Image (cartoon, helix red, strand yellow):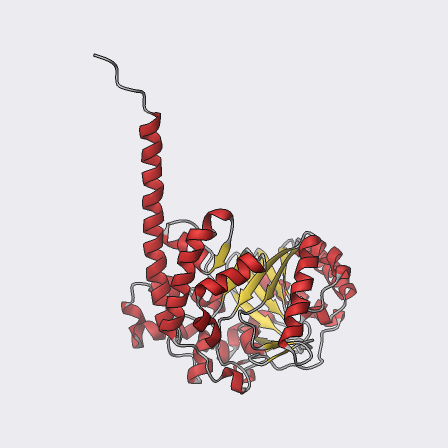
Length: 392
């Protein structure tokens, strides 16, 4: 983790309050004490100072983060402020929750610590997320809590994973459910993968790459027609559109030059790995344990597992067809954990390669068409505002 900004995905608890068939994480009752959190914070900040990293974003996840009480976060936030002030660094906080445990008692800390912004997740149709063994109960509680959070002024972004039924129902039904029925105007579509332990729910993953690609292209067209000009955001298409329009874009971690340079994940036992998809799912890829190693910089620099991440992009360019791909500068070979979950190693390109190529080509063309429309409207305005010709 180098550069001006770095990210930590923190799992202070491995406990969860729901049962999701396709989950890649190992769920236990373990959680960080506040003193353990302080130790982690001190060692991460010492790394920042040593490597001249100016700002850190902590992505708070789990397990399920709301199985911890709000009072735990009140104390943690005070410690963050004190530590950041002492070290003269910036620390920002981002919250990801399934929202099943949400109630109004969370409102104060969500406003103070997370800027009234919460990321959550839901699928359409939901076939894997269950509360008390019931998909229906999960849907009902999630929808109720989303409404209550919105009424409290909380902005909610949603991550959605498509499944085989999603592709059967199509992009129209998907868009209608989220935007027009659930009032979700900020969501991101992520690609499912068979990570972690075995479960029959993962047998169909990864999904057929061309089928997913065409679904996402259809979703893009619906979004452009019905939501793009009305404030609806759909990732990663919105940032791809920025990228191909020549504007500043923040692409997701799966398409970074190398995610190992920008983030790491720490779980409730202090184990460090590349991200939350690795840290409890694939212990063989652990970088080490931050609670047992005082020097976080040395832990990162000497980890044999981490060195594989460093080598991956160059290997793909030299040994796969990534070096000849016109979209290498966008994709960089894709996500290593999706690759690992399919092939058992990360030295292969992302199994959703064909999906991405279809998306990139479609968003590139969409950017050209939108630019042309803007130019035509500008020319029309100029012509309509021009003075009439003088009479002879």
